[in-house]
Image (tube, rainbow over all chains, first blue to last red; front, side):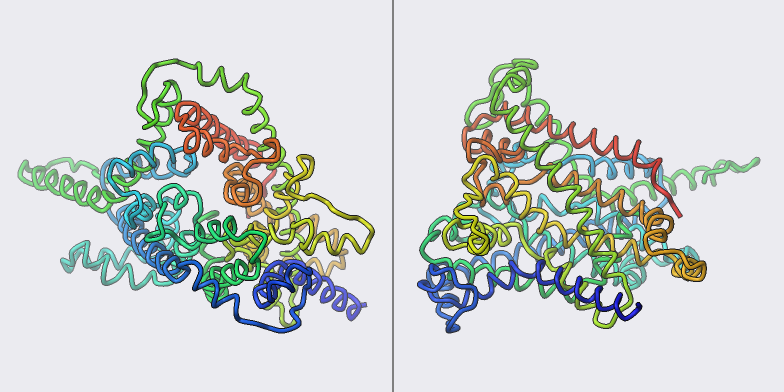
Length: 270
Length: 308
């Protein structure tokens, strides 16, 4: 009975994994096929060729797109870490008038869907002259309520005695923040970092609005570009680009899965 | 915090006041980056959207003429907008219950203690690392009527030439299927976390009492998982209202506006037709829709939820 149950479970798990992974594996296989083979509708390539990858980097500035995405994702990650940790520190350790009101304001931001603000945001960024620049792609996302909550949860677990001891020995708030709070919160900072990087790397609508040349365009928009330009003829090349684009985030996800899962739960529920 | 002492020399009061002033200033300094950014990129634009929604605008998005609620009245009579509302609601109904249910099944399986379970967990959560653009491009190819794998497989069963993305009757379902796949990773990961938080001793007592798996699921697992389920449903709902990327790549809102969901409609009105007033009115409607959903979820979801 127990053996049967285990067997059934494995069968189910394997079936589900195959279904879930199929689109990714399929794209992977297509990326190694020659154009003729793709058009014949094969699933397994008869001969693995890397020509599509070479073509993907030659025909479109994929390398430039990748670099842009890296820079933008990294900047947003850094910005969110700095801005969120400063705010979270104030909410946990500094006791001042109006703190609760400000905290409520932070909660309120979660009720505003970003898409409802994109028109004035676009106009603002245009007026600032930030279209087609890294500034326009990154700065609007530096403040993140989720990040503030996530770090606040963690900062609250730091014993208050530490803070009091630091106060008594005359350590300044900023030094306490920098030398004690941040090092003690490494795991949460990593979680938030992974989350920021993933979401920024995968961002679509905003980069579509504020970029229209190759100099700053991110990979996601590059993919759209490719897919509309070479649609019926060179699917192999498009799939090669898809694989290149998803590789960094998939790797990051596999490495940081545990962190991310814990962090998302903490920020969300408790 | 500031409990006044019965007798206090004036000097110390002054020092104290100075101190409160200083901590207040310091607190605000730490919060300043967030406050400034939230004001410029969230609060101001939300108010500005509301403001623009009662104006006719020029091509640069400057308000030209006050029209009151006319933009809204016009929208409610507009066939295209009503179609967009219908598409959005249908899309939400197709995607949210299905992805939560499927992710729950996966999470229940992946929570079993088996050898190599970590590998399966990684497989199930993999779509979380996939961008909407990349996923959509893959699905676009799979849906390709002549060379895509889906029609190839269906042709083995004698079904031929389904126009997944070009048939107005099934295009929305096709987009929904790909979206469910994209969302599963995230939903699964959160639900698995919820399951792992349940106290194992409860299962132990259930095992000793010899109850069936289904009974245990109904009486122990689901009630204790309900806060997580509740959270994941709310997030999925809000997420679903904000769908854009897969529509832009797979169907461009077509065929015959069948997949013209609200955010795509806003995008088209504002950035293709330069009709900022009408687009802002739609954005305001989106804002209130999400507000109502959040409110209803908290009001009615709360009661059924069992907190530990």
